[in-house]
Amino acid sequence: MAKLKILEFPDPRLRTKAALIDVVDDQLRIFIDDMLETMYEASGIGLAATQVDVHKRLLVTDVSSEKNEPLALINPVILEKDGVIVTGEGCLSVPGYYEEVERAENIKVRFLDREGDEVELDAQGLLAVCIQHEIDHLDGKLFVDYLSEVKRSRIRKKLEKERRQQTAVVS
Ligand code: GNR
Ligand code: NI
Picture 1 (cartoon, rainbow, N blue to C red):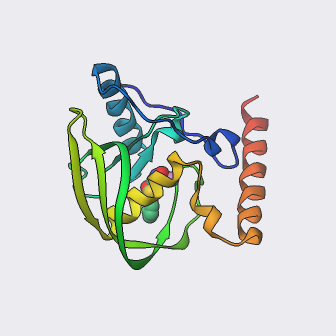
Picture 2 (tube, helix red, strand yellow):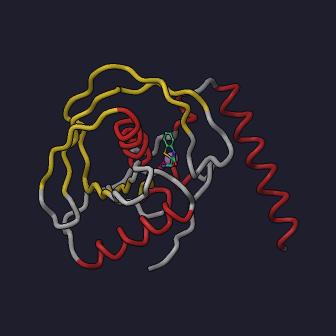
Picture 3 (tube, rainbow, N blue to C red):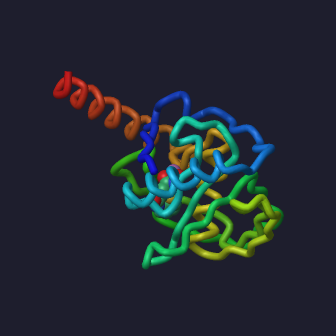
């Protein structure tokens, strides 16, 4: 297994629209395991392939408290949305920031699982929020896009400054 590097806002590669996956094979399953390892290592509840600079329609998630319910969703499509939920969201690509975002509370999502079998899943609450957050990544969208321009640019400037200071230390 391998831990992958997570891109951070405002990296323009996070704006890439991911392409459909046409074969579910062992190579993809190895990549899914690397994504899960990366997500667990970073203490995240989800990770989209876009965040590790792979522009394919794939996300992993585990919202369980025991961290023993890994899920991989390949080519996910939301079929139905219902209700509204407001959650304080964070993102591994926007480290250190948490802001309230409004999403559908209940969704029905269709995807291929790691065996390549078609699955339809009804998700509620945090799992529904996480899947919507990850599918946004696959479309090049970030949770900060739902915030005001003022908040988004404040977050961008702070992260850019942090990155400059980090670079100054290591180089
Ligand atoms: O770890 C994460 N927590 C989280 C909390 C509320 C709403 C969405 C998320 S997803 C995030 C991991 C991440 O950045 N996935 O793309
Ligand atoms: Ni995210």
